[in-house]
Amino acid sequence: MYKRLIFVVFAAGLLLNFNTIVKADSVGEEDLHDDVHLKKDAVVLKALPNKYKVRDFCKKFKVIKTEKDSLEITHYTLELQNQGYSTDNEEIKVHVSSDNKIIYINGDLQQGEIEISNEIKITEKTAIEKAFEAIGRSQDNVISYSGNVIKQKEILINSRTNRLVYQVEIIFSEPEVANWIIQIDAETGAVLKKQNILSNACVEKMPRNFKVINKDKNRSINRPLHVEKKDNLFYLIDTTHQGTIKTFNLDHQLDPSFGKLVCSTTNTFAALEYSSAVDAHYYAGEVYDYYKNIHQLESLDGRGGDINSFVNYGVDCNNAYWDGEVIIFGDGDKKNYKPFSGAKDIVAHELTHAVIQYSAKLDYQGQSGALNESFADIFGYFIAPNNWLIGEDVCVRGVKDEMVRSIKEPDKYNQAAHMDEYASLSITEDDDWGGIHYNSGIPNKAAYNTIVKIGSEKAERVYFRALYYYLTSQSQFIDAKNALQQSAKDLYGEEVAEKIAEAWLGVGIS
Image 1 (spheres, rainbow, N blue to C red):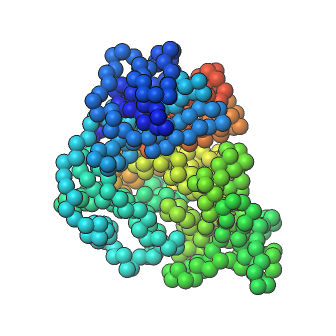
Image 2: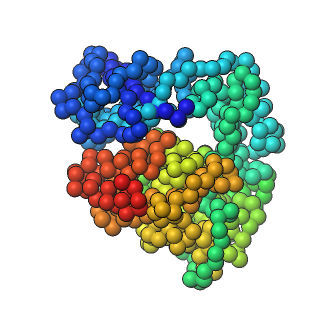
Image 3: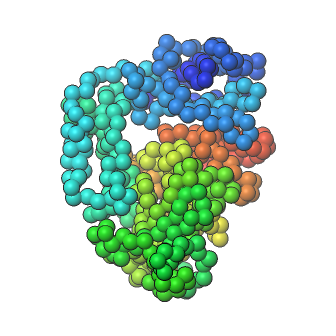
């Protein structure tokens, strides 16, 4: 179902009742009654305007996450459930100040009640078999570098059909890199959803224009490395963080047994053969440090998780991937592209996909998918702010449009820069899941406008706060604009929030 919903919050003795918001996906403090506060016991909140009515099914919401930030604002994430089953990507966020005042509500506020229309008749084993059939693979002929081919399997409600489904997430690195989400009808076994949500640096189906703008750069760069010594060998293992950073060499082999930890007899790793691994290892540490030092995020998942990088993937592979668990780098074909681990912004872009995966979980299609790509680009810039381009450092003879994106001038590299150029494409792999890499130019341009107006230091904090606390999996461009405004208001006040609005107005979103 495409309608969105009302809600009740149950958490640690708290009960919050909210009315349906028609159309709008967020309600700010200015639309809430000033005299409404949360109380410890059950209280019906009259926070929303009188024209919104409380619905009978609001008690079907469950608080799945409660988090208090450094500003003492508590963020509740609610999920619609029925008969104990969760819905896919239907959530609401409620944000409460330190004095228990609701300051913001956003998410799927127009969702209607979900009534399950089928029964569970097939087994989990059958569903998994059908999931592999749907993607033309068998479980025996795929390999994941992380060791987990089946990352997730659960029963939930498909909110568009109101049917119970087995959702199976399949990750593999051989014979190709893929991260599939498949939904199998729990009664009939029919495939209701099939999408490869693999995040990668290059979309080969985008238009290709070639421009010579620079020459190859010297790859001989000294980088300080954190390594570990074992049995007279030095390994690319960084244990200086809560999460361990490890770098593996695939040596262009398809057999994952070649994926060995990179090691050397000296701690310099000076030989050219180590360059891709050294870059990947060093930049992974740089990204870890950025999120830790600037945003107090402990690793990509916020819980000190490890970062595993695999270099020298495939033969002449012109791409880099976040597969949902590890980052994989192609070594380039040497004619047009250099090793992809050598571009700090690409490493930052791909690892930011992991941060998105563990925070807003932006759905990888349509506008939410474009926001997913855009936020990865934007933090690629924040982490490597040498210029407004993303990916230019991997180009041997110049900039190729399918590889490079510009935060400042998206339309220069075959991306939309304004809603007048927005492409409404089908949600298929052939159309890049709704043109997510093309349309991401619009929020990229809005980010450029924002940085120019308020400066990079404020902008990066506003963007991270919006991503981590306010965006939901189904957020659209207008939701991102509203979330960024609210984040700016939280951090810096109304004046900066107004500049965010101006930045987005510049790309046609008001």
